[in-house]
Image 1 (cartoon, rainbow, N blue to C red):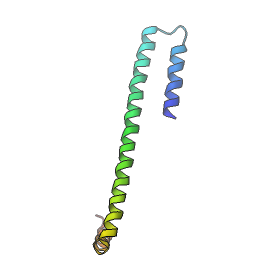
Image 2: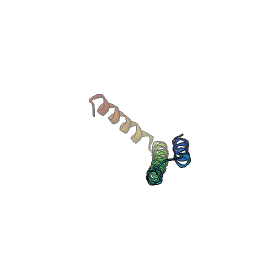
Image 3: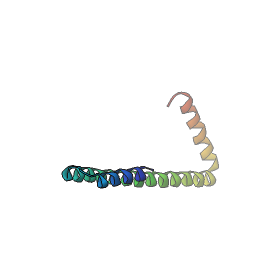
Image 4: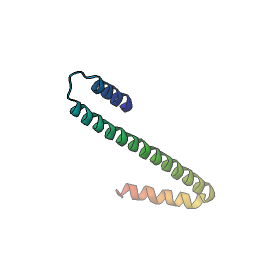
Length: 85
């Protein structure tokens, strides 16, 4: 959605008649920076999603291999949460 909005703004700037070419060029340059930032944010989100999935899988594997230890850790976590930690 953001990409579509940026593309529409860019098209409007390029099609603007009578606008100062220098201003148009500056606006286009700023839009290019914005596009790069949006792409970086999307890459970061993908990395976070992959990391979350890896942690989830590791937790499930740990629980399967060490059920008693996992239960004790769960109880400790619950107690800490109850006291606000």
